[in-house]
Length: 167
Image (tube, rainbow, N blue to C red; front, side, top):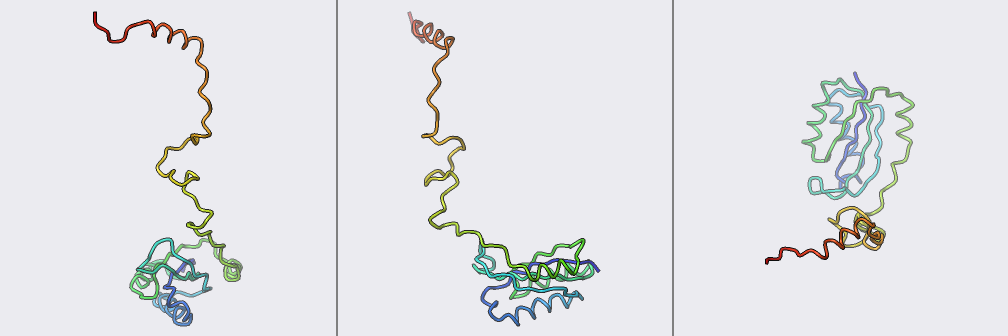
């Protein structure tokens, strides 16, 4: 049996009924003969994009041990579940009871600031800068350098010559 860390994303609407969500996650793991080492409701968050027509979801962190050949069955059961929206399973090489305990007592990571608030601006830093090539802003561009002596001499020679004229 190998140790795994899994992050379940469940429907935010069913999250208030924590007992049913927890029983669904445990049912999926029990079908694969997995031994649950730790299970924690992590956080409810707004999703970056809709998943199965849901804009919010609740994350559940689970540490478990299972035979490697049963992971595909866990992923399959999660896909057909109506409560579980997504699942990510990672094999954990050196999972210790201390690491599980630390993860179960730790707070979820801080939330990212909302992107469309007052402090948000497009990449260039100003409205209307999208698609603009990178480089200094027009007001930051330096004054053009004075022409060198060689360039000035070439311009004088070029000024006296006719361009494209006919006799």
